[in-house]
Structure formats: structure tokens, C-alpha cells
Amino acid sequence: MIDLKCFSTISSARLYNTLIGVLLVVSLNSCVTNRKYTYLQKDDVNPGTAMLPKDAVVRSYEVGPFEYLLQTNDIVSIRFESITTVEYDFLKNYGSNSIGGNAIVGGNSLLIGELVDQEGFIAFPFIGKVKVSGLNIFQVQDTLQAITSRYLQSPIVKARLLNYRITILGEVNREGTITFTNNRVTLLEAIGLAGGLTDLADKRNLKLIRQVEGKTDVVYLDLLDEQFITSPYYYVRQNDILIAGALRQRPYRKYFGQNLSLIISSLSLLLLSISILNSN
Image 1 (cartoon, helix red, strand yellow):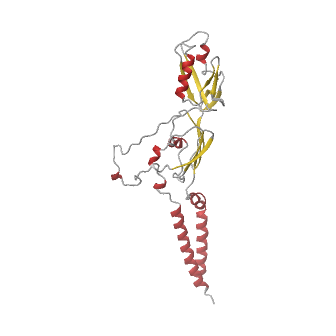
Image 2: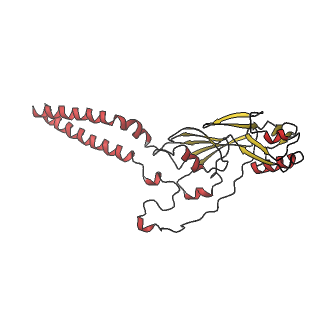
Image 3: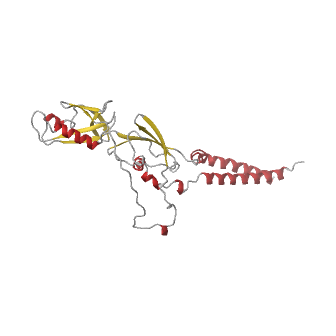
């Protein structure tokens, strides 16, 4: 005949050990170490304060040149300025009001821009179409300045790219599309504008989707390695999509962790019931 008290005592001990084991496994699997969290590491994660030199350059890197060339469907703000007061003076005011162009709302300001057509041209009054695709923003300014100098006295052309944007998704604090006023932005700056990656983001395998000359490239980036500074993907480009995947700790933190209190309460109630049964 089975001794129920003995059986209950053994079951209680096993449940208690199981509970401790579950808590230990969850704790270990939900931890994210600094080596999975700190950006741009170079043997400097938790080395001890005495090992880090102070007020000195530790390392230097040569960052490759970056130059964005305009492409179709870009939106460019163009302004002409000069001292001309004759029949071509409408050019010097072009771009400073609502003549032509596409409005882009950014913050509290309304910017006026010109859309680069499918053949890479922008059309202007009187001047006609000007080829801008394949040029950087400074070359666009020089090209337009050379053309308008035939009509305006001492012209100055100011050009700005308005729709330089990327999209960041996944384990970031603010998912969405970011539009920049500057076309020289590093990937780390872009992540900072998105509120940074979460603690559970897999910084060793950030996915970058980039459109290049009619094709789409998929690249995985390691933001934990300091050598990323020299990567050709250090700067973001127009229409980049960044996807931050999650570490395997995410299910424990997001799902199991939320229900852990319920699990502990249920097991505690079961252990209490077994204890009461033993006492009887």
C-alpha cells in the first residue's frame, strides 16, 4: 500500500526543486550581457577603470568618403539669388514661394521642392530642363549657377535635398521613417534619432535593405565591432531600411516574464496544499 504522506513529501520536494530550477533557467536566459549590448567594442567591455586610458586618443580610423548622388524621385529645394532687376528677376524669386514644386511638411515649416523626373531632369521656367541625376548637391548648385549666370547678375544657387529618409523597424524605441535635413548621416546617428535600439536588440545582426541601381541588396551589420566605423555601410543612404532583430532573450522577457508571477503563485499554492496534506 502506498504511503500518501511519504509520496506527498517526495512530490513537495520535487516541486520545490523544479521551481528553483525554473527560476534559475529563466534568470540566466533573460540576462543580456554587456558584450551583447555595448556598441563598437574593442576589448573595452568591463575591463576595469584602471585599464582605460584617459584624455588620450586610443585609436584612429580612416573613414571612407561619402557622396550622395541625386536619383529619380528625389525632391530638391532650389533657390536663386542675385542683384538682377530686369526681365529675368523671376528666377531669383523661384523657390522662395509656392511657384511649382511639391510641398513637404517637416516639423512646423512647409518646404518647397522640385521632383526629379524619371529621366533625371528638373524643369525650370525659361531655362528648361536641367539634368541633375548622378550629381551631388554641390554639383547641382554649380550647374545651375553656370546656366543662370547667362541671365542673372552674380547669381547664387542654393540647393538642398528634402526627402533624404530612411525607415527603422524592429527592436528600436521609436519605429518609423526619419527624414534628414543633412545627407551625410551615419547609421549610428540614425539609430539615435529613432530613440536607440532596445536592450533586447541583436546588435550583431542588424539587417540593412538598400536599393542600388535598380536592385535591392540585403546586408547584415555588426554594430558591436568597432571596425564598423570603416564599413562602406557606415553612412545611410536614401530609402535605406534598417531592421533590428531580437535576441533569444526576448520571449523570456516579453512573454514568460510577464506570466512568471502567475506561475510562481500557482506552484506556491500547490506546495501549500501538499504541506497541509502532509500535516494531516
